Length: 404
Image (tube, rainbow, N blue to C red; front, side, top):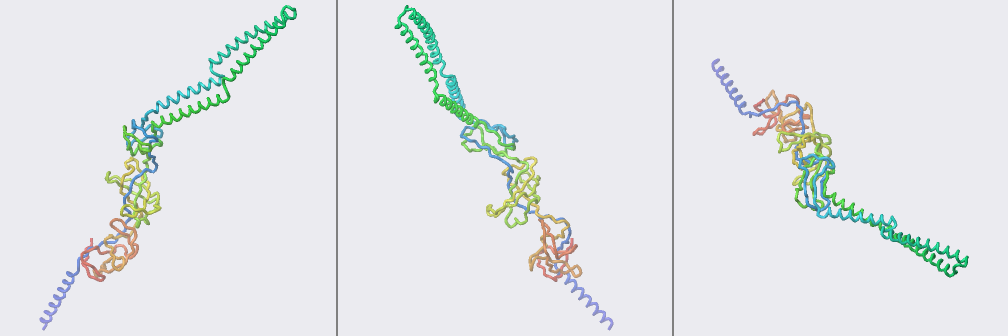
């Protein structure tokens, strides 16, 4: 009897062991991750384009042949530095002709201001001098005849004839004086002054045309674009080069519309350029966009960022990668982003360590980076959450946990 009871106990124990083994082997293996505390950064990744904060396009004011280009792309220039020389046909001849006309007009004005032409004045003065000498002689003859008439040594007729001769000579002298005055009229002087002003204006215009042959830098900066080449013919308004200040630069960052709410002024920005791998530039958000624009198939806001560029490696027009650090949380409670599931709300499958079962736990998330997400509520330190598996889970299910 005792032997039979012992056999029954042994069989029952074996059945229980087999059942327990089968239960254990039926539980799926599930990898778990531990809830940990760390600093988490929320970074918005997108693209952008570099442009100078201050710049000017240097253009020609007139059509001309580009004779020489005196700067190179990437060169730093100072304000007023000679950049290029043009060649305009006839400009030198125009200036020489204007200067000759001005010299002639000034000479004519000086002649009129002096009273007339020298030859005419000399002729009038010579004639007047001769007539004055004749008049003086005639006056002396008249005085002699008048004395003789008083002495009855000459007739009154002879004295009258001598007096008439004096009057005739006086009239001729007066006529020469009138002629001398008439050499320069009131209108002649005004007309001569106008001709001088017109000629001087021609000189100024010719000098303007001549100055257009020399192109100077309107500001100090770096020549970042130089489309013109020596020997090319340029039309008025064509660009020779572009000059800008490249330290710092502006980066126009294209942020998709749904992400714009994460961007604020003064947030840190990191810039990379595929052409220079391993190099980074840093800056800050200067201004949020005022409108949303279409960029290909995207709807974006243009966020303006100020970025340091000490080596001037970032040149205007460069397409770059932009990373805006929108949020930093110190000592955040975090889990892998892959552990967060969206079933009946946002939650995770947490491990009940005593029974090796999982339970569905609703959580509230916060900041995130590429791999981890902040848990604002729903979990505590050292909790374990299920990682993704091929086998679906349900609350209360027994699992075989794999814990790193």
